[in-house]
Length: 221
Image 1 (cartoon, rainbow, N blue to C red):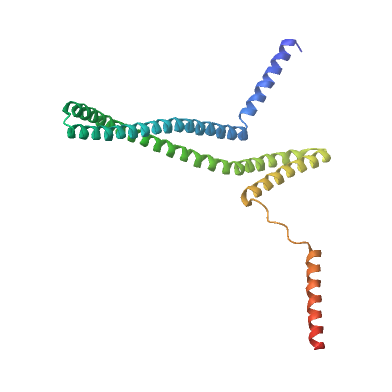
Image 2: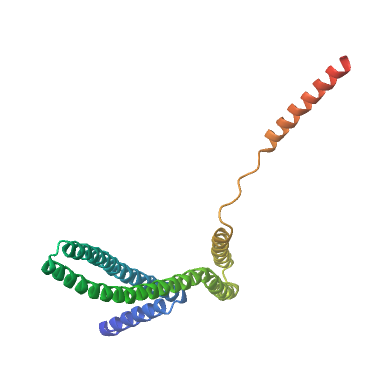
């Protein structure tokens, strides 16, 4: 075999191996979940920026409202002192800030609505992500069943019983591990172990002795 043909065969084998890995259903499932995780992370980043802008507008609204109240008091005080020029300046500044306040409040409401929409989007993504996580084990289990069936067919057709037995045990071990993992996720922490029989027997004997002693004292009286 020539060197170029050998290189061609090696490259072809590597390509098909990579293609098989790419088409692996489990790998594809995990990739979809990773993509959703990235989308959720991006949404959280956008939410953080949105909430920052929202807080800035809240501060601007509060500051402008405080300034309006201050200018109103200044105008009233200037009128009391008959300082009309100062009163006019205070009133003018108050009116300008009232316009700003209206603009800020409208912009704030728009930003607040966008924040609410973004929060709803994140909630939907999180619910869908949790749903897919729950379905992942079921899908993998179904895939393992299909693969196990194919492996068992190959093992049955094999002429070496030792290889067949070992292969069957490996498949069974994977199924048991998956079942154990599924049971752990569904039922959570196991209940605590009951008391040891020996301890229960000792307690029973102790209580029986007390009853006998009490009965003996009663008969003696």
